[in-house]
Image (cartoon, rainbow, N blue to C red; front, side, top):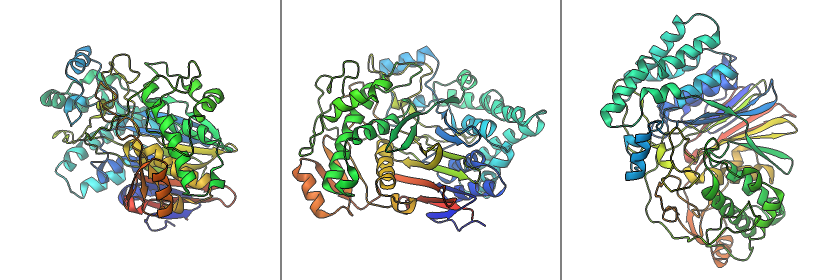
Length: 536
């Protein structure tokens, strides 16, 4: 029996929390059909490309994490597209800069389709026709002008699966090949040429969903799993390592000390993100050193509990120094347009769990009239700064903000978190995670309790080669109105440039599994338009 779709739910046979309610229903439908978490996640993600269009689109990208109950391990599937392979395109970017305000030349290879098919192929039990069925009904019901074109593209992929002979794997391979190597790829190339994009069919043919090990840290007996430095994910790991040295629970939830310590730790972790993160297939990121005990202790010494830092302070993990040179922290009033992201977490009755963060960063891009595929501007999350770890190169993954989280304890999956909100994503994940770990909150409270964030970092959507100009807001601290006035006044006294908002700070969803009772709890912040449902 499915609980009604709302913003929080619980059950014992599976749960989904995501953006649009019809996408949640798509995932629940697959769970009701005895599909597993991978099947249900793929159904949810495909539906989100329609229900949450603008925050996501089928030509977008999806970092995807899964706890596989059979292998008892967490894996990462990189559903992120890459920069164009053509060296002439890369040369153009260095000569003209990467467009930030919406431009077809800033489109990466579409990664979402291959991600969904690969997830079902490696971890699911269903066929593509099964997981796309809820989305087809949404498209067939009508809505936007591009619905029929996208429906036709999906019909062609279903046709490829039906015609293919052999195993389920071979049938699913036929589905992805029609998109990335067949007539759909031909149609996309014609569209790219017509709009002046740099991508070609060869980019599609070269694309693969990479399966990787997660980055992970232990925090108070919980193991936090994140994607590698082609995302900002390890910034959460660095922040947690710094916070191990503070008794956050004793400070009191949402006290001045609690908020101050977390914000100051985040400033240090984000400074290292901006200085060192990039696609690890192209750059040697010193991640082991960044997460080491010695470096963490050196960096933690910079946190002054009486004074907010207004400086950019990346560290030096190579020489174990707390600060690497001096860096200006100029406020940048320029705000490039951001039109992402949505959310997806799933758990099934067999112990599998998925966290995924689908996005597209459309910034004005329109669908291809022939295929109905819309792609975003994620290449702008790279830059043209000489020697920078996140500088653009042919076939390189941009260092994205998309950053799902899976948490295990004693080898079992207990939580999945996904957040929409650009540079706010890991900050809100940290709020939600600590609400649970330090204060025992279940998802319904963890995702709705007042939150806080800072803009003391580089804007991940600003490709300005002068990374100082990409810095956003020195010393800023935004808190929800539910934070006590006395706490806000004390934070101002410590030097934080504080502002208050009654709106949701980013958009979290969370699933928690109580292995004692077998109950799966799911929730999404209703103030951020999130939805959840579960099977009883």
